[in-house]
Image (cartoon, rainbow, N blue to C red):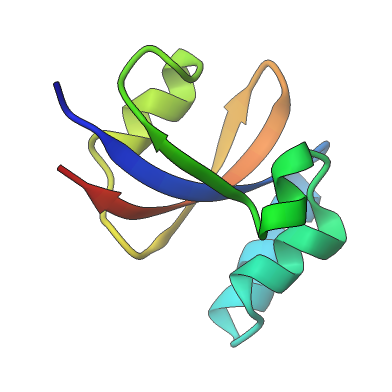
Length: 92
């Protein structure tokens, strides 16, 4: 079964998500942005979600993690929880 590791930033609005993505693309550190802005408890680990397999996350999140480009900031991805920026760090 495929497995991935990823980190993410969860915010309430698409506008905030887009602004944070621009900040990261301009050089801001993903982990620091996660610690300062994400509403997910994973913010304490810089947004790190550890390893997981398909079905452990919501469908919209899984679709991106198991098909998206590795080591690139992807999103905004809208789920029932809000808007995510996702960085896939490894997939095997």
